[in-house]
Structures are given as C-alpha cells and as structure tokens.
Image (cartoon, one colour):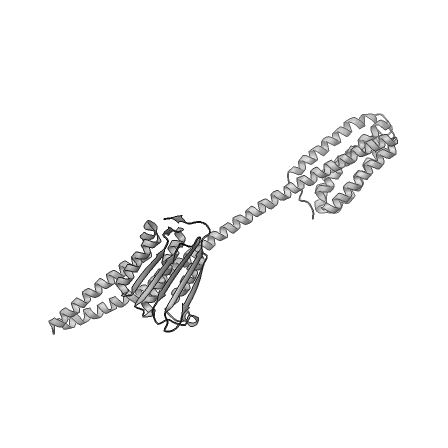
Length: 402
C-alpha cells in the first residue's frame, strides 16, 4: 500500500534533505572551482535538487517515475564520487544518499521500500570500502549505513503516526455519523411511542367514553320524547343521564391521569400502581390485589414502561377477560432483577391466534415496551383457564433504595 505523503510533516523531512544537500555543496563545490571538472560538478549539483523538488509532482502523473528517479540520483552521486579530487573529501558525497532512503519509505510500499533502503546502504558501504583503506572504509561505510537506517526508521515512524492520526479521524467521523443515526432512530422510536400512545388513547375513548356519550345521547332523546307524555319515566331518564355523565367524567379523569401520571415522578412506581389499581377497581368493578416484594426506586425509564405495561394489561383484563379478580405482583428483592406478573381469573385465550384479532394490539405494545428496557415477556394463557403475563428485567447496575 502506498504511503500517504500528503501530510505537512513530509516537508519537515524535505527541509532536512535540502539542508544536508547545502552542507555537501558548501564543503565539496569549492574543491572543484577553477578545475577542468567545474562545469560538470556544478551541473550535477544543480540537477540533484531539481530532481528532488520535482519528483513528487512527476510521480503523481507517472507513479513509476520514482524508480527512474532513484537511478538518476544514484548516478549523479556516483559521478560526483568518481570525479578525481582529494580522496579525503570523497566520502562526503555519500550524504546525498540519505534523502533517497527517506523518499523510498515515503513513496513505496513497506516491502519494496525496505529493499531500496538495503540497496542504498550497500551502495554506501561498498563505495567507502573501494575508496579508503580497509579499516577506514569499514568505519565510514558503517557510519553511512547507520545514517540510512536512522532516516528510514524516522520516516517509517512518522508515516505510522500520520496513518494512526488519519484512522483516528476517520473513526471520529464514523462515530459522529453513528451518533447522528442513533439520535435519528431515537426520534423515530419516540415518534412511534407517541403514535402507539395515541392509538391506545383512541381505543380507550372508543371503548369507554364514546360508548357512554352515545348512551347519554340516547337517554337525552328518550327524555325529550317522554317529558310531555310520562314525567316519571322522563325523570328516570334524566337520572340515568346524570349517572352516565358522571361516569364519562370519571373515565376522562382516569385517561388524563394515565396519560401523564405525576405519581411516578413524584413518588415512584409503587404509589403510581396503587393509584392506578384503585381507579381500575372503581371504574371496572374488577377486584385487583397488589403484591409487593421490595421497595426500590428504579431508573425512570423502567418505572415508566412497567407502569404502562400494567396499565395495558389491566385494560385488557377489564375489556376481554370477563374476570372478577386479578393479581399484580412486583418482586424487586432479587439482586439486579425485576419480576412483574399480572394474572387474572378470566376466560383466557389462545396466544397463537390472539394477535391477529382486532382490539388486541395492546399485547404487541407491551412486547415493544419490554424490549425497550431489555426485558423478557412471557405469556401463559389457555381458553377457560385465565391469563398470566410475566415480565423479567435484568438491571445493569444496582438500583437505589427508595
């Protein structure tokens, strides 16, 4: 994989390369001024930095130009070394190989880049062995090999740092996108919850308040007809109208309380359940026992969902079960686990077919609520044997004592 050399850090390396080139130029060029090789040396000293400055631009158009670039630069360095001069100065030209090591690491994949660094190191070592006595040649050669390795390691470390930074930035961008998606999903779920609550309210209004108002309308029509014919019966219809109006008012108050149960926020789940059960017994005539084990305050979202589940379950008991007795059990004494059960003595049903029947969308709503708080819902019912609903929730952390 080709290294990403678009980072500004690469210019730090190129600045070092140019400084190194100027050091070689300052030391070696004066030795050739006024000699027959002056023009050649000056030309080579001009071509070297020009190639180094244009290599990156040309490689963008011709990717394989980098290989020709290395050959040309090594040729320039070899030519400079071979031009006769004071042998004591010839080793200094080998400094021009060091930038090539860094460029190999920056511009080639890892494996090929290492091969080129090894080749450049061998070039330096062999050149020094050929130009100097054995002991001096080995010393000079090893020095330049160490320089090649140092430049290569620094370049590789810088590239890894740049790549790591880029990956971190990419991960941050992905996290931002994921976070935005989660926010969008949360809004969608909230919208679905609101829609489900509206549907539930519509069913409640249709099944209770709407029927009462319809009966109230019939009683009003009957009273209007009877008022001139039979005052006694007209009075009875008016009394019935008053009872129906009071019943409708009670139903509306119950629905309003269920839509926004302040008792959950103020006192917790248990007081809210007691109030809900009292209202249900008063309005529906079903005896309901509340059995409690523990008195913990739960996370707000769990309390709200458990309240809605009990609310929906008791609504189903009143509408469909024909039961005269129900039991709501809440066990909070098991460590990090909540168990809620709603059981009735009604006619029961077949769980496999009940979801497809009209008027039983509440069961689906309860399943969604249980999933939302990471719980498990189990339903046990048979025709003629009542219904038992069980919800188990495993808490992620210790709940606070109420």
